[in-house]
Image 1: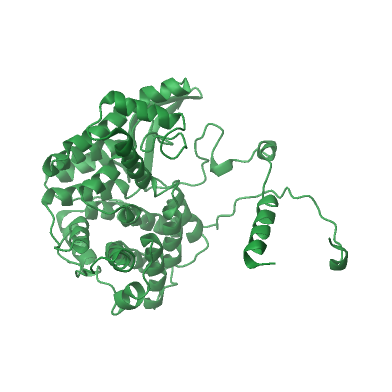
Image 2 (image 1 turned 180 degrees about the vertical axis):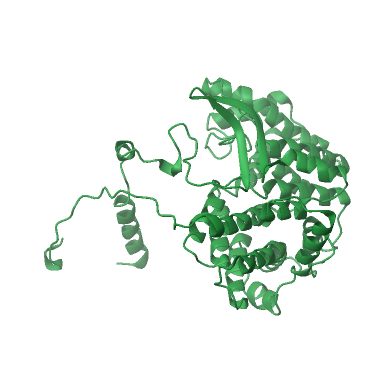
Length: 449
């Protein structure tokens, strides 16, 4: 039997013998995906770090409300208003808040930002040996590998002393943009035949400024571009303990493994298209909309396209309007609200208001189409991925960087949850699985057909 035939045969066996009948999940009251029957998440832990509010429960009824996102008890909308009013970039301040549970003073923030800047450079020969010599066509894969290789450069890699874990996390927060930027340059050179540009990280700038200068050949950017990317990083930095990648950090960290293994596992989770790839799906959908509807389409043309999507006759046949709807938010996603406002400013600077108007139309038209098609009065709001994809497009960022940018932001939240797991949660996570395989009867190998 040829190799391909054998693999096909084995794959068929693997599929047939791993399928579990759906009624069994109901019979044993299994919370599939750790979801309750009403689609809310099963409560599996406590956290001080982030909170997502999108509805309230009154007399066992889910009541929609305007969405709120809180970091350490502070409303993110108020935090954003605060640093924007001061004309400051906010990501470093948010990192401080998430890690230490309090807002920094001016002196605290200056010292913290200086430390992160000094930690941005990768170890000697790391870039050449670990990134450029072994490029990957997927930057998330390259990022995960870079994180794991960092273990070898750390003489205290396995220490769970909080001071040591914090220092490891600070290095990763500082170095994620550098690893991603160099991983992108290696990928573009080896897989897209582009020129290689390697700019040293600048210790004097904020994370968004530094990243833009590292990925652009001329290292230039406008202040509004830096502010917009900074806001995107702030809004993606944390989203409660229950999202898939953050929960992965808690699960893996509960085994008392090292920081690098826990964070690499989170990157693997985020890479999945059901989690970190949502903004990319929005971009692909909007590209298809452009092809189907042409330039400057009318509301009626866009509505017709969205109806065909819901009828599974357009785009990928999933019936999903990407960028619309959320598991928790009902009336609004506060991240989308804030990023949309900044996206409008950037669209004005870039001369892309017509492009912005198409995204706005998708947001305006989708709820009524959804209610009509589903015969439902449930609210439907735009989520952050609708406008993050637009922002990245206006910044001229390639699609291959969309999910890695999510990781550059979320490492702040992952680090905070890593420390919280070590300090507060003593037991290894070990949920139960019930085996429903029928008992087999052993037979000698000579008797098996």
